[in-house]
Length: 331
Ligand code: TRP
Picture 1 (cartoon, rainbow, N blue to C red):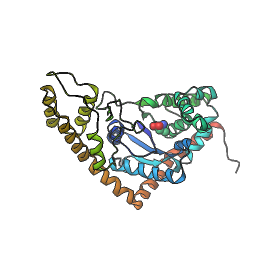
Picture 2: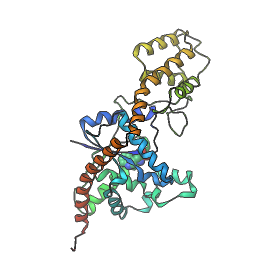
Picture 3: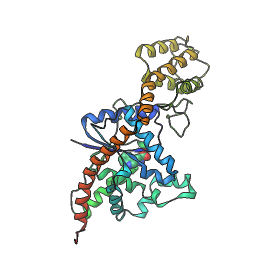
Picture 4: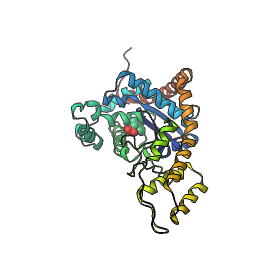
Protein backbone atom coordinates (compact mmCIF):
# COMPACT_ATOMS: atom_id res chain seq x y z
CA UNK A 1 0.00 0.00 0.00
CA UNK A 2 1.50 3.36 -0.99
CA UNK A 3 2.67 5.52 1.88
CA UNK A 4 1.55 9.14 1.84
CA UNK A 5 3.15 11.87 3.93
CA UNK A 6 2.01 15.45 4.15
CA UNK A 7 3.08 18.31 6.36
CA UNK A 8 0.66 20.93 7.48
CA UNK A 9 1.73 24.49 8.14
CA UNK A 10 1.13 25.24 11.79
CA UNK A 11 -0.28 28.71 11.33
CA UNK A 12 -3.89 27.70 11.78
CA UNK A 13 -7.16 29.07 10.49
CA UNK A 14 -7.96 26.79 7.60
CA UNK A 15 -10.06 28.50 4.99
CA UNK A 16 -12.42 27.27 2.29
CA UNK A 17 -9.58 27.26 -0.24
CA UNK A 18 -7.52 24.92 1.97
CA UNK A 19 -10.52 22.70 2.50
CA UNK A 20 -11.49 22.17 -1.13
CA UNK A 21 -7.90 22.32 -2.38
CA UNK A 22 -6.30 19.87 0.02
CA UNK A 23 -8.06 18.73 3.18
CA UNK A 24 -10.98 17.14 1.36
CA UNK A 25 -8.51 15.04 -0.60
CA UNK A 26 -6.59 14.05 2.54
CA UNK A 27 -9.83 12.72 3.94
CA UNK A 28 -10.39 10.58 0.87
CA UNK A 29 -6.78 9.35 0.85
CA UNK A 30 -7.12 7.94 4.35
CA UNK A 31 -9.20 5.13 2.95
CA UNK A 32 -6.88 4.09 0.16
CA UNK A 33 -3.38 4.66 1.50
CA UNK A 34 -1.28 4.51 4.60
CA UNK A 35 -1.33 8.19 5.50
CA UNK A 36 0.86 10.29 7.76
CA UNK A 37 -0.24 13.87 8.40
CA UNK A 38 1.74 16.06 10.72
CA UNK A 39 1.82 19.61 11.95
CA UNK A 40 5.12 21.14 10.89
CA UNK A 41 5.88 23.08 14.03
CA UNK A 42 9.69 22.87 13.67
CA UNK A 43 9.36 24.51 10.28
CA UNK A 44 7.37 27.35 11.76
CA UNK A 45 10.33 28.40 13.91
CA UNK A 46 11.94 29.95 10.84
CA UNK A 47 9.67 32.94 11.41
CA UNK A 48 10.22 33.15 15.21
CA UNK A 49 6.72 32.78 16.70
CA UNK A 50 6.27 33.56 20.40
CA UNK A 51 6.06 30.44 22.61
CA UNK A 52 2.37 30.97 23.31
CA UNK A 53 1.52 31.54 19.64
CA UNK A 54 3.44 28.42 18.68
CA UNK A 55 1.48 26.34 21.16
CA UNK A 56 -1.96 27.74 20.42
CA UNK A 57 -1.43 27.49 16.67
CA UNK A 58 -0.50 23.82 16.88
CA UNK A 59 -3.57 23.09 18.96
CA UNK A 60 -5.84 25.04 16.64
CA UNK A 61 -4.53 23.33 13.49
CA UNK A 62 -4.85 19.90 15.04
CA UNK A 63 -8.44 20.65 16.08
CA UNK A 64 -9.25 21.99 12.61
CA UNK A 65 -7.97 18.93 10.77
CA UNK A 66 -9.79 16.61 13.13
CA UNK A 67 -12.97 18.68 12.74
CA UNK A 68 -12.71 18.38 8.96
CA UNK A 69 -12.56 14.61 9.15
CA UNK A 70 -8.97 13.46 9.47
CA UNK A 71 -9.56 10.25 11.35
CA UNK A 72 -6.84 9.32 13.85
CA UNK A 73 -7.91 5.68 13.54
CA UNK A 74 -7.21 5.65 9.82
CA UNK A 75 -4.36 8.15 9.56
CA UNK A 76 -1.32 8.77 11.67
CA UNK A 77 -1.78 12.39 12.67
CA UNK A 78 1.05 13.78 14.75
CA UNK A 79 3.04 16.82 15.72
CA UNK A 80 6.47 17.02 14.10
CA UNK A 81 8.27 18.09 17.28
CA UNK A 82 7.01 14.94 19.05
CA UNK A 83 9.21 12.82 16.80
CA UNK A 84 12.92 13.34 17.64
CA UNK A 85 13.91 10.94 14.87
CA UNK A 86 13.00 13.66 12.36
CA UNK A 87 15.60 16.23 13.53
CA UNK A 88 18.19 13.47 13.74
CA UNK A 89 17.63 12.44 10.15
CA UNK A 90 17.64 16.14 9.24
CA UNK A 91 21.11 16.46 10.79
CA UNK A 92 22.36 13.46 8.86
CA UNK A 93 20.89 14.67 5.56
CA UNK A 94 22.39 18.12 6.11
CA UNK A 95 25.86 16.61 5.68
CA UNK A 96 25.03 15.83 2.08
CA UNK A 97 23.06 18.94 1.23
CA UNK A 98 25.09 21.59 -0.54
CA UNK A 99 25.05 25.31 0.04
CA UNK A 100 24.71 26.05 -3.67
CA UNK A 101 21.59 23.99 -4.22
CA UNK A 102 19.97 25.29 -1.04
CA UNK A 103 20.69 28.91 -1.93
CA UNK A 104 19.15 28.43 -5.36
CA UNK A 105 15.77 27.32 -3.97
CA UNK A 106 13.03 29.75 -4.94
CA UNK A 107 11.30 29.59 -1.56
CA UNK A 108 14.57 30.47 0.18
CA UNK A 109 15.18 33.40 -2.12
CA UNK A 110 11.61 34.62 -1.60
CA UNK A 111 11.86 34.35 2.18
CA UNK A 112 15.25 36.06 2.22
CA UNK A 113 13.66 38.93 0.35
CA UNK A 114 10.59 39.01 2.61
CA UNK A 115 12.49 38.93 5.89
CA UNK A 116 15.96 40.33 5.17
CA UNK A 117 16.49 40.89 8.90
CA UNK A 118 16.09 37.17 9.60
CA UNK A 119 17.78 35.04 6.95
CA UNK A 120 18.53 32.16 9.31
CA UNK A 121 20.11 28.79 8.58
CA UNK A 122 16.77 27.10 9.27
CA UNK A 123 15.32 28.90 6.27
CA UNK A 124 18.21 27.74 4.14
CA UNK A 125 17.86 24.12 5.22
CA UNK A 126 14.04 24.12 5.23
CA UNK A 127 13.99 21.69 2.28
CA UNK A 128 16.30 19.29 4.14
CA UNK A 129 13.94 19.17 7.11
CA UNK A 130 11.05 18.66 4.73
CA UNK A 131 12.95 15.81 3.05
CA UNK A 132 13.52 14.21 6.46
CA UNK A 133 9.77 14.47 7.19
CA UNK A 134 9.00 12.63 4.02
CA UNK A 135 11.64 9.95 3.75
CA UNK A 136 11.67 9.02 7.43
CA UNK A 137 8.42 7.17 6.69
CA UNK A 138 9.69 5.92 3.32
CA UNK A 139 6.87 7.80 1.67
CA UNK A 140 5.93 7.08 -1.92
CA UNK A 141 3.53 9.96 -2.41
CA UNK A 142 3.41 13.53 -1.20
CA UNK A 143 0.34 15.66 -1.84
CA UNK A 144 1.73 19.07 -2.69
CA UNK A 145 0.56 22.24 -4.26
CA UNK A 146 2.48 24.11 -6.94
CA UNK A 147 4.40 26.16 -4.37
CA UNK A 148 5.93 23.02 -2.84
CA UNK A 149 7.02 21.26 -6.01
CA UNK A 150 10.59 22.46 -5.81
CA UNK A 151 10.90 21.42 -2.18
CA UNK A 152 9.66 17.97 -3.10
CA UNK A 153 12.16 17.83 -5.94
CA UNK A 154 14.90 18.46 -3.36
CA UNK A 155 13.55 15.65 -1.19
CA UNK A 156 13.82 13.37 -4.22
CA UNK A 157 17.38 14.55 -4.75
CA UNK A 158 18.38 13.90 -1.13
CA UNK A 159 16.76 10.47 -1.12
CA UNK A 160 18.48 9.51 -4.36
CA UNK A 161 21.79 10.90 -3.15
CA UNK A 162 21.70 8.87 0.04
CA UNK A 163 20.84 5.68 -1.83
CA UNK A 164 23.65 6.30 -4.30
CA UNK A 165 26.30 7.29 -1.74
CA UNK A 166 25.83 4.14 0.25
CA UNK A 167 24.75 1.96 -2.63
CA UNK A 168 21.48 1.03 -0.96
CA UNK A 169 17.79 1.22 -1.77
CA UNK A 170 16.71 2.48 1.61
CA UNK A 171 14.54 5.33 0.42
CA UNK A 172 11.83 5.13 -2.21
CA UNK A 173 11.91 8.26 -4.38
CA UNK A 174 8.78 10.15 -3.32
CA UNK A 175 6.47 11.38 -6.04
CA UNK A 176 4.08 14.32 -6.07
CA UNK A 177 0.47 13.40 -5.65
CA UNK A 178 -1.55 15.98 -7.47
CA UNK A 179 -5.28 16.19 -7.38
CA UNK A 180 -5.47 17.76 -10.77
CA UNK A 181 -7.86 16.02 -13.05
CA UNK A 182 -9.68 14.76 -9.97
CA UNK A 183 -12.32 16.99 -8.52
CA UNK A 184 -9.85 19.53 -7.27
CA UNK A 185 -11.34 23.01 -7.36
CA UNK A 186 -9.34 26.16 -7.16
CA UNK A 187 -11.27 28.35 -4.78
CA UNK A 188 -11.15 32.01 -5.70
CA UNK A 189 -10.99 34.88 -3.25
CA UNK A 190 -13.83 37.30 -2.65
CA UNK A 191 -11.94 40.27 -3.99
CA UNK A 192 -12.09 39.31 -7.63
CA UNK A 193 -8.41 38.40 -7.64
CA UNK A 194 -7.07 34.89 -8.09
CA UNK A 195 -6.87 32.23 -5.41
CA UNK A 196 -8.29 32.37 -1.92
CA UNK A 197 -5.35 32.82 0.41
CA UNK A 198 -4.82 33.76 4.00
CA UNK A 199 -2.11 36.26 3.21
CA UNK A 200 -4.14 37.69 0.35
CA UNK A 201 -6.70 38.74 2.97
CA UNK A 202 -9.57 37.44 0.86
CA UNK A 203 -10.26 34.20 2.69
CA UNK A 204 -13.20 32.78 4.59
CA UNK A 205 -11.99 30.68 7.49
CA UNK A 206 -13.75 27.47 8.48
CA UNK A 207 -13.86 28.75 12.05
CA UNK A 208 -15.28 32.13 11.07
CA UNK A 209 -18.49 33.39 12.65
CA UNK A 210 -21.66 33.55 10.52
CA UNK A 211 -21.86 37.33 10.91
CA UNK A 212 -18.37 37.77 9.64
CA UNK A 213 -18.96 35.42 6.70
CA UNK A 214 -22.11 37.29 5.77
CA UNK A 215 -20.31 40.62 5.91
CA UNK A 216 -17.45 39.42 3.72
CA UNK A 217 -19.73 37.89 1.12
CA UNK A 218 -21.99 40.93 0.95
CA UNK A 219 -18.91 43.10 0.40
CA UNK A 220 -17.55 40.93 -2.41
CA UNK A 221 -16.68 42.78 -5.60
CA UNK A 222 -19.23 42.61 -8.45
CA UNK A 223 -19.86 44.58 -11.61
CA UNK A 224 -22.83 46.49 -13.09
CA UNK A 225 -24.49 43.23 -14.17
CA UNK A 226 -24.98 41.45 -17.49
CA UNK A 227 -26.14 43.68 -20.31
CA UNK A 228 -26.60 41.06 -23.01
CA UNK A 229 -28.25 37.68 -22.78
CA UNK A 230 -25.93 34.67 -22.54
CA UNK A 231 -22.85 36.78 -22.06
CA UNK A 232 -19.71 35.30 -20.58
CA UNK A 233 -19.16 36.05 -16.90
CA UNK A 234 -16.22 38.27 -16.02
CA UNK A 235 -13.82 36.86 -13.39
CA UNK A 236 -15.31 38.70 -10.41
CA UNK A 237 -18.71 37.15 -11.10
CA UNK A 238 -17.40 33.74 -12.11
CA UNK A 239 -15.62 33.63 -8.75
CA UNK A 240 -18.90 33.96 -6.88
CA UNK A 241 -20.40 31.20 -9.01
CA UNK A 242 -17.39 28.94 -8.39
CA UNK A 243 -17.92 29.33 -4.66
CA UNK A 244 -21.63 28.72 -5.06
CA UNK A 245 -20.89 25.50 -6.95
CA UNK A 246 -18.97 24.01 -4.04
CA UNK A 247 -21.40 24.91 -1.27
CA UNK A 248 -24.86 25.03 -2.89
CA UNK A 249 -27.16 22.55 -4.57
CA UNK A 250 -27.14 22.15 -8.37
CA UNK A 251 -30.68 23.61 -8.46
CA UNK A 252 -29.54 26.83 -6.84
CA UNK A 253 -26.53 27.10 -9.11
CA UNK A 254 -28.67 26.57 -12.17
CA UNK A 255 -31.25 29.10 -10.93
CA UNK A 256 -28.61 31.84 -10.73
CA UNK A 257 -27.00 30.78 -13.99
CA UNK A 258 -30.32 31.19 -15.74
CA UNK A 259 -30.89 34.53 -14.07
CA UNK A 260 -27.45 35.65 -15.25
CA UNK A 261 -28.07 34.48 -18.80
CA UNK A 262 -31.35 36.34 -19.14
CA UNK A 263 -30.05 39.39 -17.32
CA UNK A 264 -32.54 39.23 -14.44
CA UNK A 265 -29.92 38.39 -11.82
CA UNK A 266 -29.73 40.50 -8.69
CA UNK A 267 -26.31 40.24 -7.13
CA UNK A 268 -27.75 40.99 -3.71
CA UNK A 269 -29.84 37.80 -3.92
CA UNK A 270 -26.88 35.80 -5.18
CA UNK A 271 -24.73 36.99 -2.31
CA UNK A 272 -27.40 36.32 0.30
CA UNK A 273 -27.77 32.78 -0.96
CA UNK A 274 -24.01 32.28 -1.18
CA UNK A 275 -23.50 33.54 2.37
CA UNK A 276 -26.29 31.29 3.69
CA UNK A 277 -24.86 28.23 1.95
CA UNK A 278 -21.29 28.90 3.06
CA UNK A 279 -22.54 29.26 6.62
CA UNK A 280 -24.51 26.05 6.23
CA UNK A 281 -21.37 24.30 5.13
CA UNK A 282 -18.99 25.73 7.72
CA UNK A 283 -21.36 25.70 10.72
CA UNK A 284 -20.94 22.03 11.66
CA UNK A 285 -17.19 22.23 11.10
CA UNK A 286 -16.90 25.36 13.20
CA UNK A 287 -18.83 23.86 16.07
CA UNK A 288 -16.66 20.72 15.93
CA UNK A 289 -13.52 22.90 15.96
CA UNK A 290 -14.81 24.67 19.07
CA UNK A 291 -15.74 21.41 20.80
CA UNK A 292 -12.43 19.73 20.01
CA UNK A 293 -10.42 22.79 21.09
CA UNK A 294 -12.05 22.60 24.48
CA UNK A 295 -11.48 18.86 24.81
CA UNK A 296 -7.92 18.68 26.08
CA UNK A 297 -8.31 15.04 27.03
CA UNK A 298 -9.23 14.08 23.47
CA UNK A 299 -6.51 16.25 21.93
CA UNK A 300 -3.84 14.81 24.19
CA UNK A 301 -4.94 11.26 23.40
CA UNK A 302 -4.83 11.94 19.66
CA UNK A 303 -1.42 13.61 19.87
CA UNK A 304 0.03 10.85 22.04
CA UNK A 305 -1.25 8.03 19.83
CA UNK A 306 -0.07 9.85 16.74
CA UNK A 307 3.38 10.40 18.19
CA UNK A 308 3.67 6.74 19.11
CA UNK A 309 2.67 5.50 15.68
CA UNK A 310 4.91 8.03 13.94
CA UNK A 311 7.90 7.19 16.11
CA UNK A 312 7.46 3.49 15.49
CA UNK A 313 7.77 4.05 11.77
CA UNK A 314 10.47 6.75 12.06
CA UNK A 315 12.73 4.86 14.45
CA UNK A 316 12.82 1.83 12.17
CA UNK A 317 14.10 3.96 9.30
CA UNK A 318 16.55 5.87 11.47
CA UNK A 319 18.06 2.70 12.87
CA UNK A 320 18.60 1.42 9.36
CA UNK A 321 20.16 4.73 8.30
CA UNK A 322 22.52 4.87 11.29
CA UNK A 323 23.75 1.39 10.54
CA UNK A 324 24.31 2.18 6.86
CA UNK A 325 26.27 5.32 7.71
CA UNK A 326 28.52 3.33 10.03
CA UNK A 327 27.42 4.20 13.53
CA UNK A 328 28.06 1.23 15.80
CA UNK A 329 27.45 1.21 19.50
CA UNK A 330 30.60 0.72 21.60
CA UNK A 331 28.60 -0.26 24.64
N1 TRP B 1 6.51 23.07 3.35
C1 TRP B 1 5.13 22.65 3.44
C2 TRP B 1 4.22 23.89 3.30
O1 TRP B 1 4.66 24.99 3.50
C3 TRP B 1 4.84 21.98 4.75
C4 TRP B 1 5.64 20.73 4.90
C5 TRP B 1 6.63 20.51 5.81
C6 TRP B 1 5.47 19.53 4.16
N2 TRP B 1 7.09 19.24 5.68
C7 TRP B 1 6.42 18.60 4.68
C8 TRP B 1 4.62 19.14 3.11
C9 TRP B 1 6.52 17.31 4.17
C10 TRP B 1 4.73 17.86 2.61
C11 TRP B 1 5.68 16.96 3.14
O2 TRP B 1 3.07 23.74 2.99
